[in-house]
Image (cartoon, rainbow, N blue to C red; front, side, top):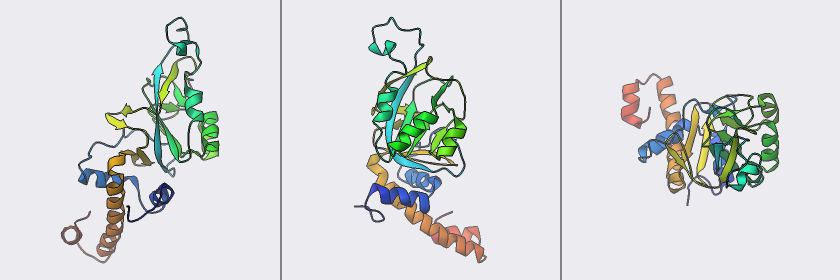
Amino acid sequence: MPRYWTSDKELFALCREELFVALVGDALDTLGYQRQFLDPRLKPIDDDMIIVGRAMPVLEADYLSEATTGNNPLSEKPFGLMFEALDDLKEDEIYICAGASHRYACWGGLMSTRAQVCKAAGAVIHGFHRDTKEVRRLGFPVASHGSYAQDQGVRGKVLDWCVPIEMDGVRVNPGDIIYGDLDGVLVIPQEVEVAAFEGAVEKARGENEVLKALQNGMTTVEAFKKFGIM
């Protein structure tokens, strides 16, 4: 049983109010999970956005609209299973999408509106988003490689969702916790989430003691020797 929270809502509130992504990344390093950050270019579209929730992984692929004579029924279905995936979002889930090239946007304003109605926690796109002004107006948390207006409609399709995906060599399973701020986006596997977040809380509170000591003139050598944190 976690010591500092009793539900996902309490944990996610703790992430927004007391923690930051770097602390959880440090805790994962200590636990031996040292490759959990996604590409450093993948960031929230506004510096003050915090993204935290459970992963709903989405598998996308390049799929030209002219390819309508193949053997897969998806060939005749615009956007593939994107609408079904979007409608399946649950409260506090994150639409996290990978698999396509970076030649078009995989997220936009109308998708943000639907996700917000579903009470989703955000979207993490291994590629581009568009409709930036609308997304910012909604205040819906989105992380991507940047904005690009070119549409996925004639260029890509969602092939499946709620399946494991891989992003930058990091496996993302359904239900893993995704945590992102202006310093990056982190994947926290379910099997170590309690230890990772408890370690982050303890380090956050320890760093406050280090801060006070440094402000009072303690050297960094002395502080690290005393607290083991820097």
